Length: 602
Image (cartoon, rainbow, N blue to C red; front, side, top):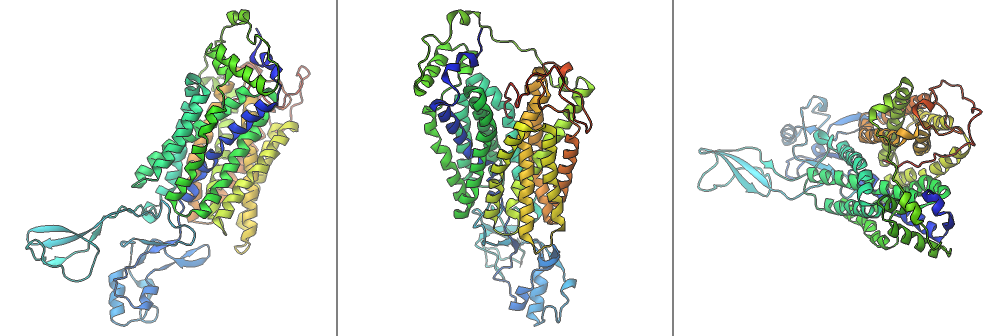
């Protein structure tokens, strides 16, 4: 019985049909790029300070000194979450006292931002952090009959008029019932949580995408998940509060990764062996980076978060016509014993390539003999069956998770760098293209563990150097960040091939699936590394750099897989080594640059 690759050899490797599938599936990944990173602009936190009401009876001097100063990165800046107690400074203003001269500001009592915040609009017109919805003000009045809530337009000074025949005895502070999101100060924890919940959706989507495509077909699930990603992004525009926005964002994350995974599967099943490698390394990764680069371009011209979301949904709608050009996977159709449909797709591909297809592609005798392979059942505990495989699995989990932390933390933190937020985000996306090309070239010629460890040392080392750069040399800091992103991105793109080569056929799919799940855990905690920057500008880079160098050292203890025969059983797995490079055994076959079976990305 011939396998699928033998049956379709007559199609060739790189005809018009293969080129069309390559570019259409790669193009379908573009929306994943900007949806995956859109949170950097949707949830950006502008500079802010406590609002001092216009109705406050303050002199110009006291209004200018109503916000205390705090030390940040070696310089004094206005506090973002505190102000001097308004009643006290209003009293000083009425007495004609001057701040700093007659009154020691350091001795004044402070209070929170009870009247809300003023946000800078220099960079963003609005984000979910600054969002203000429709609400009302309730005046809380104390009367002989008890407390009385009176709707009003604002909190004015003075006595309240008679209301419902009851004269208030005294006026208390009014309570604002605005649906303000204001994800700052006491609620600033919600900003990194927004990103983490998106990546939690990515984790959920990783579990179900492969199973759904196995059951219902690659093409159907590909376009269904495109619709989920686009449709729920559109619904986010109408979010009335942070809770609604984040629930929808979780679903967007599920659609985003599912679309990516199914496109990856479909491409690797339709394309030939040689093109398959190019598609899985440069194709999907580079077009993801293209989508990532489009994000700051959209955000630069559209500064309102709702309108930005609307613009980001448009490319997803443009993918609808691809339904009539992208076929179902013939391999999946064969697995479902739908041979006529598979044969029809192959004949159309031959016609597009101007190649005469055989009269009979699938021999009836072969179809009668065809028995779908029943794979031995494996369990996750098989990845820890022996001491050797358990050690490799634990190291792989650390490698995937910490590399993912570095990649996503640097990506999410790009707009927070000094200078133009949009340019920095664009550079962070642009640097990924040479990183993917470099990874592809290195994988073709050099030992895996040394090149992965090398780019991790490069990425982690330059991140550690940022703490020594003087504050005035911001261009140098940005350059080091981009170089660090280059190294970590290169390493990240090599992990699928490296992990697939380490594990035997029996558990290979499970191993790559479990370890890539660890990368989703890394992406979930990555926003909190960015959050460390609120306390110290260089702290995120010190932590990320240290962890990246650490995992680079761990990588040197992996067995080498370059040039080795892919293991078929657990006993054939290579042993964990130290720093010595194990020479190729005599019975090794010709070196293989990539695994025989391409593994689905989770």
